[in-house]
Length: 173
Image (tube, rainbow, N blue to C red; front, side, top):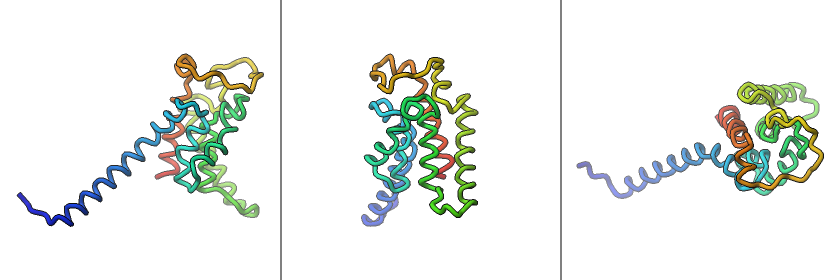
């Protein structure tokens, strides 16, 4: 048996606990994004709010900012809210704030295109109505009630998980 001084043992334990918590937090963000959707938030909110703190934004601001992007932007079924959130998070990390910097504009556009293409390859589209198989025009802005049947009929949890995984691999590496 090796005897370790108490202070050293506590220090080692604290490092191990910190590493475990960090690993647990990073591994579970993908799951957290999906669970946020099951709490009643839309796809964009579920993805954006899960990662916004990594880029200095608080959760409430993130939820408010991304709320309009859900259901394919304002429930118009256009670009998937999870994809929109990937783009917004890329902007928080690598976005351009100088209107004269053409190279920076090109870099962020390229990053968004690359991330969106990964999503498209895995899911067949980045367009909400295509992902949901909707052929009719969405007339109402009113969201559907979040029921068990609603959640069971939607590919959204998978799409949120996919976007979260891409964010982990592209923006948090």
